[in-house]
Length: 180
Ligand code: FNR
Image 1 (cartoon, helix red, strand yellow):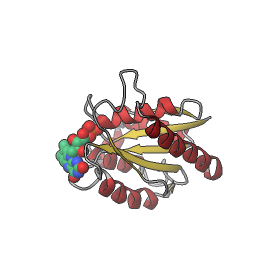
Image 2: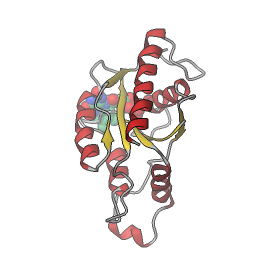
Image 3: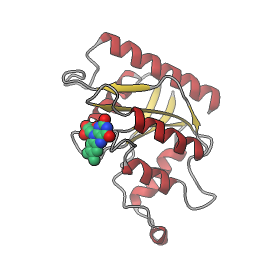
Image 4: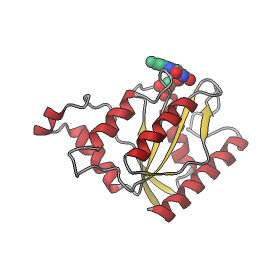
């Protein structure tokens, strides 16, 4: 059982990425113990380290306690969201105390359109690798979340989707075992 910190790049309550991240969590409940730190943090400001925001400390504690990080991000204007960038920025400081280096990581994301999040994920990859995380490059999972794809309990309704997502989660579990 791997501990995974799941960073969801949308802050809104009805986020399809949060719904998707929770469905992944339910599907992989035997593989992962998941924590979803709140990314509704103040914009990075060096001055705030004098009295660090509680959310920042919780984010860093979540990642530090985790064996791996899973990024689940929407695409905003052909890149990943400011919530994700801001979390990465906070986690990369103070100098010498970054929480990212050597953490196994994977990226996915959901959008309404078929190729939604492809560009966001590509952009995020370079930042994640640049922070020293050990990124699983394959499979790339661009999830088109259609109405009724996730039921009221929070489970994927399609068997084909469940099988595909399960294989993604099993590969991530093996990646963590190998690189964690
Ligand atoms: C979007 N959306 C979007 N979608 C996409 O596929 N490519 C894009 O470049 C953008 N750009 C974009 C910018 C901004 C500011 C917003 C608010 C939205 C649509 C986006 O994928 C959609 O709103 C998702 O539902 C957002 O994810 P959550 O909040 O539902 O998880």
